[in-house]
Amino acid sequence: MDTATLITFIVYLLGMLAIGFFAYRLTNNLSDYVLGGRKLGPGVAALSAGASDMSSWLLLGLPGAVYASGMGGAWLAVGLAIGAYLNWQFVAKRLRIYTEVSNDSITIPDFLENRFRDTSHLLRVISAIVTLIFFTFYTSSGMVGGAKLFEASFGLSYDQALWIGAIVIVSYTFLGGFLAVSWTDFIQGILMFVALIVVPIRAISVVGGWDATIDAVGNISPGHLNMVAGVGTIGILSSLAWGLGYFGQPHILVRFMALRSPKDVPKARFIGMTWMILGLYGAIFVGIAGLAFISTQDAALLSQLGANVITNDAGVQMLADPEKVFIAFSQILFDPIIAGILLAAILSAIMSTIDSQLLVSSSAVAEDFYKAILRKNASERELVWVGRAAVGIIALIATLLATNPESSVLELVSYAWAGFGGAFGPTILLALFWKGTTRNGALAGIIVGAITVIVWGGFLSGGIFDLYEIVPAFLLNLIVAVVVSNLGEKPSAEIEAEYDETISRM
Image (cartoon, rainbow, N blue to C red):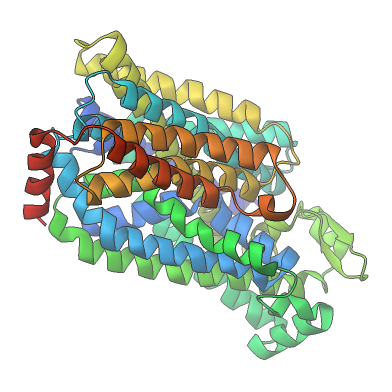
């Protein structure tokens, strides 16, 4: 790596750590640590939600999928855009109001327990267990992305890159909690946005313009430009179904809960959706331009930059790891300082998601296990440090899971995304929109949804079982929750009154 690139990269990292230290001084209790005291403005909330949502798959996974397989990968972007809009439109404001009305709940398990008056704590504990299981896999995907970045940029071995990246990423989350995560996500979201606009424009320009890029890709692989070529009905439905996952992602929902006012939702929605759609377009264009560009480059130069190449069956030179196409563009097309900024943008995508995941996981340990079950009289300072310890432990487990250099960012994200969408998505929607939902219905739905994802995604394959596991999990969760709720006792008058109060504030 060029010295100027390295210096730029290090300056960025020091800036993120400085934010962590500053936020450390403002973190006095658990609510500050996991929710920032409900003080986020619409801009910070929107970009923080987007950055924590998109993760390394936006700069590594999605461009890599389009680069390797073509525009069929764009169906995933369509599904995500629709799901994100519906989440902002229908869930954000109501969740922000309901969590405050329902005993000022600060985590999703906390909200579910308060919403359904579950004095047994079973709903809270099961929700926290599901959160920890799937966030460990989700965090692992970010560790893989970080390792690929450090491996390609610094010439390190995969294992060295993995552990260095993990230490960097965990540091400011450990210190600053939600405020550090939100402020850094805001900066990282801007950096990711600029990178996804600049890189594809520069790449397409170098190839010779949009028409030349499309002609080149068409000559290499005509199917790359066809959204339905080689995808199939199940493939399209599976990609579109990613949109269902938004309703159950704790690290995104918590941004809605942290807004300073429900009135900020429309502005936050506009900012967030604009950022997301333009970012998705940029990622797709990086993948398309990558096929035209990489095929004409000197293999020795690419290898020198850490991007190993192979020749496919059609005789086309391609990257051995498609998920490194954005990294290759950053290092080849830009001067050292800009390259350093672009590499920092990739790390931003990784850090902005991992920090949110670690924070939600730590809140599950501190609020939903330690305080609720083990030490009900624990001090706020004690809970903050329990949360910080949980960050370190969960990060360690996720890093160990990521030690396989063949791990795919997109595959790990896919599994975790389905886990949250299938386990929590229908539960959140029913809790917010159906007064008749009961504790037993919500609990049964969460368990069935989580088990369906694990069994369908881990043990079944072929035919209909190739359908993305979030679809059967979401549907079965919804059906079971409604049936069990209707079979049991109706919610108490107190629960119904709280629901009515929430609706009155809309």
